[in-house]
Image 1 (cartoon, rainbow, N blue to C red):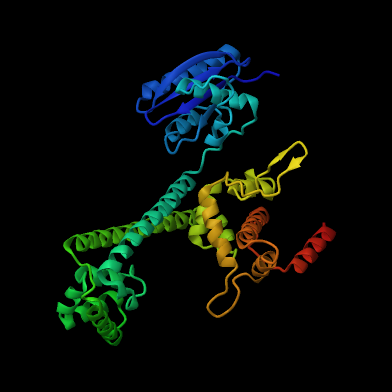
Image 2: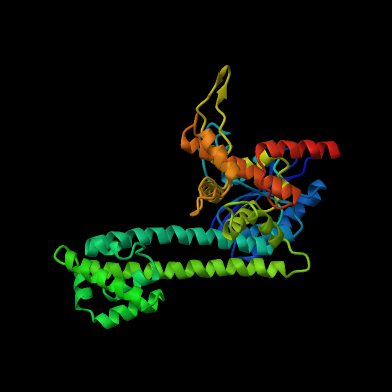
Length: 429
């Protein structure tokens, strides 16, 4: 069999090291590629083309997924006609101890990446659709902003507790538009007590849009609580300054997150207006599953990409990283196996919230998903709650796989109804 040459690339921020192996695994060329130099990248292309002439077969390029640094090389190499595979850093780490000596540098890492392709079959990575790539970047940015927002909300809560601990007795959500408006203009009990009644009521009414009666009632409660806590308040200049900074950060992050969400909606809307939409039909199918909204559906689509690459539901479960780890050696088989967590961290995050939504009841007492609800509580009889929740996450991924495989919206069926459906389907076939 005529094996192709392999070019392994160790990706860095400003430059990458490329090592080209011949079909018999000998190092034939090395080059340093500077990402900000078109000439440098073209020299690498010329070297790959020379390798193709030398061995009469086009080389395969393998590079490690390194945040966003690999994207420029990936797209340029693919546009130049080369097969490109992007590998997970976990895969490249697995070959790090192939030698006895403890040596690590970019040249050796590039060599090891090339060897990894030779030792195991790695599929060629499909160039992501531009809209899908944008969607992925936006979804990841949304959750980063959400994490930062949570951090600043916690900091704000800590300062509010010192300045006016009973403030949340009046405004339960200290991060609401109305609460932030009051805290920004009247940051301490003293400021509240000195404020004009008309001005404070007007501020509450304008920011809440709930009418004069509601605003007056809130004003009276706020003044009462301010009198109670005034002597205990730690409203020094430092705390007031920190309070205002955190209010500003919370507002900025809330607005930025809204802008990201608007951009996600815009991409999906524009896709739906195309002659052959790609993203919106999948989004619609995912949104038919209980507990999955537009943002969650967009995140799942953006992170998974091409669902057709998964031939079995277990492969999709593994990509989500919620498959059980395996611990077996000789006659020993481990029974206390945890979730592998080898897949996308963001996918596990959205599946966790989706699972929680499916095991809860709505305000009217109606179950969000009666089948999953009963399945979870049945599991809880013999399993810890977290283990049962993990089982729910896995079942939901199986549902996602089935919905996208069949290209039909989700239908709620009991286990008995599903068995009957499968039986009927097999008889018809």
